[in-house]
Length: 169
Image (cartoon, rainbow, N blue to C red; front, side):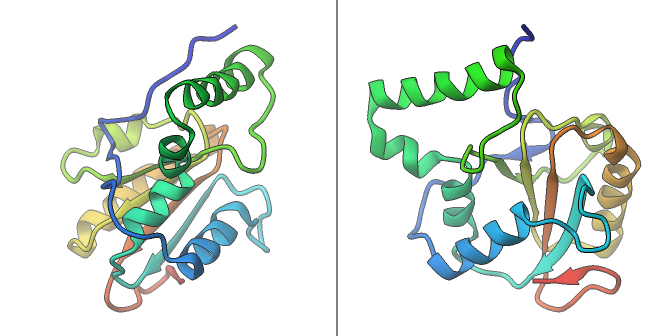
């Protein structure tokens, strides 16, 4: 049995617990996150850019299970979390289709956390609009380590315009 790891607070900040979930945005991002790359179906890291949207925090909270946890209440929520930990740590089975993702916003700064990052579960990392050089350095650090990723990592870079070489969602 391996011990559970926590949310990577060094690399990312949890999404804000606010706002209504935009169903269309959630469906689109979930399909992209869970779908496979046509050219490389088992690719551990995929990157896309997305236009700024007020609903991104709400969508991230839906994907990471925050909204579901709030609806379940204290004891049912604890039971749900324990079931997830049991699957991850004891049975060593892969995640089920609707298990929560780790979702959060990148903490700009040192690239050390990105270089050391190893996802504990499927992860959606969102990058706020920043200078192109900072985003490129983050993506390079993640790409360099992606062969060691045992869970899928999806990165969405928020940008008002398309970014050369990055898929647009």
